[in-house]
Length: 271
Image (cartoon, rainbow, N blue to C red; front, side, top):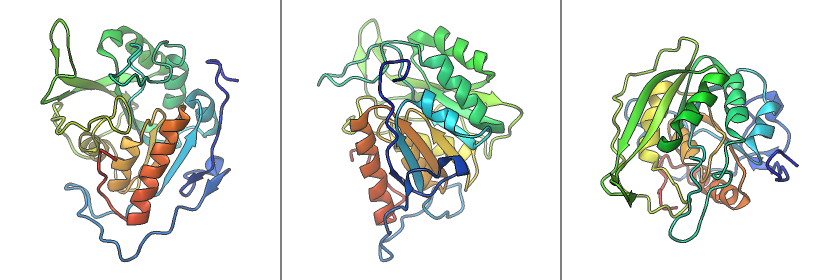
């Protein structure tokens, strides 16, 4: 049992290990179709081969300690917003009703992140104080704030809520691979078909390109339906993800396996 009362399950996954500590229960990725057409690479990267992935089901506060210090070159993650979110169909997000995981998770994220590296974290704007406290306690400094304006309203209460936000967190003195603006258009609505708070791949690709280089090791410890990993694989990064919810884990595995089998750098956000 972990501190949230869940049994930890580490599931055999597809992909090659990124580090010796990850070699347990890793299977080879499915064979790719050599006749499949590879779509054009991301615009400001060289043409990388589609990278493999390593995903595990379980609590990231228990999985992260299994990895050595400085294993990963970039973290891009969308953790629970601590708002008790429930969508129109009744779907919710695990551990979105508490912050007990927040400090332990980011303390481990900081530890496994390379020297001179970045972490991009989405957050709940009405819980900013809790996120700031956890990030700073872990050792991160704030490097920037990125806004993602939407073309629609997620909800309407006191105002129309039409954007998402993420903070750029910094460890050491890294330099971005290329400098991007701090406003990135959300683009088309994903429909949240794969996950109740699904992020479009199109907003994650520029983050991965800006804050890591081809061949880098990218981590998302709250991977949901694996949008970050899909974006990272499109950019030729080696991707690792953890997901507590078994249903979401299975969706992520199916999604990424389909990418490998089709040798495609493009993923339909709707599944």
